Image 1 (tube, rainbow, N blue to C red):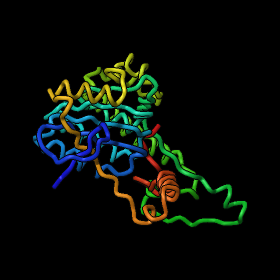
Image 2 (cartoon, rainbow, N blue to C red; image 1 turned 30 degrees about the vertical axis):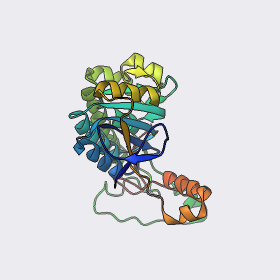
Image 3 (spheres, one colour; image 1 turned 90 degrees about the vertical axis):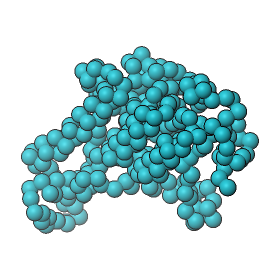
Length: 276
């Protein structure tokens, strides 16, 4: 028998009757699959009349952020989706929020940060001091762009900047479409600046101020759900066996390592992110 968890923390009850969904996007966005699968479940479940999307994320990798955007957009076409921003819903986190029916933030939530960044480490100076050199072979002049052992040529820098700007234009265009804002207006805000929830509301990136409880009440009103309607919450966190056995400290260390060692998306040692 399936169960759901209520927001009131009163344990589990058997799934029955109309309910609301509560989907969480937490931490750095590196893989959207678990969240998009759960959003699809909520979309297809006719007993779920609306969804609160709780976002507490500084952003993350480009493609997963776009996948979240598409999943939220598809869900909002068939039932109301209310975003509740926690401490942060910035960059890729805001990308995921943009197509929701209504966006709510705490006045002190950090959001916006619309932009793209790329980083790579240049180790040439260190290698020179150590007396090391690298012979880099590649099939084309752009294939090795971003190598940590070879400086970027002007051509490579222009090539990578063109990638970044194209991703940035995609981000801006999607936000403008989702928020029904003029493209030029979003472009003015899309210089990488982060905003408080209150500032974001003034600029039209957020609709209302309020926390999770207010967002849940707003969703229930939009979906015509009673206060007694249950909550289907997910996605379920899949914690590896070792952290479960060794306790929360090891789990926290593993999470920190995962967040600081995200893999390259397009080139070795080049990280393209929608991230604060």
